[in-house]
Image (cartoon, rainbow, N blue to C red):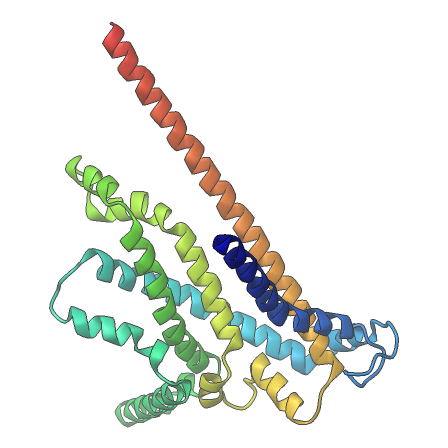
Length: 297
């Protein structure tokens, strides 16, 4: 009886939590089709705000900039995070390992204000050093795409490192050890055995990096310059001047894109996992048949 009560309690709490998370999103999607300019008053069904959003060059340019920064910074962060996670998971002890682990995870616990300010001061110092050496201003370090990319890659790498490291700690090292006993080099073992096994974690880290980059506002505010406003900055500036129905449309489109992407990737990962399970079962069956044949003959 106690277990049944606990089960009902957990179901109710789950329902309340899901409702708290998703009811506001459903309302937002519904009001994206609102004909009225007042986002909280229903004025009839209309798609005019979708048409206006598609003709809003400011929002489209900011969205394109945010998407480019998110993809590039996540790609670089995945490479660096995979290397850092592999070093922390497979190389147990090396000189400076504690300091390295702390520095890698620092951006996760550091306030975004401190991270953004420190990166801005670093970029200014580097600009001054380059100008004093070459006599020419380092225009490529002017606040814009490149500086925002540096900040987002730094932030995303910390989270991706944790994801990759956790996945590597869960893996059975017997396959890697067997390949090493057979004479395979460490680099080949990494690309042929380890990398395919941690591929789902890499994809998850890449998606997490894109989400963090698209969502970031504080660090971007320190590292962006004139003409390089990202989508969160544009949304925040518009919200301060009052609610705009186009923001509902934009949020609805982002929800649809992210939801579709997550569903497709989860379907692909489940399909790959099922395929690996079938291959493993078939290999075990073939091995069992070989053992039985060897016994009978």
